[in-house]
Length: 176
Image (cartoon, rainbow, N blue to C red):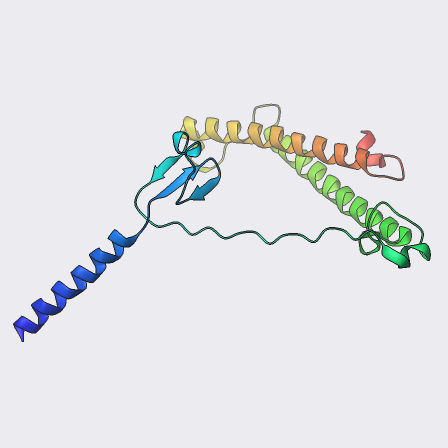
């Protein structure tokens, strides 16, 4: 029984080792992996040691069709017909996007007002154990200040996005 186990372990070790000896050397030449670099490439290629590498080719995209005979019946556009959006649908999407941005702006401005009220020009009220541990208070004041700055940056970003939107002028809340 012991002899069978030893023989089995030896065979597995031999077959496992032979598999690693059969593996070819793999080179990385820039973004390309190859096992047969040219003489010119071999100077710049690096030998990859260790694990095996699997490279999967990306699928080739089909070239856009030129339209063929059916293009005479349709007006020629700068993109395929499946990529075009109906102008009414686009206006609806733009209005929805504007609505989302405006609601985010209102929410960010309300949060900013809450933060500023809590901050009280750098003198917020003491909480819990902050009277005994002044560092906790200082840490909370610094965190409030950072939150105010971050929220102010968010408001500015939302206003920029609203300014880039096609259509109507900036909302009344953005003019503050």
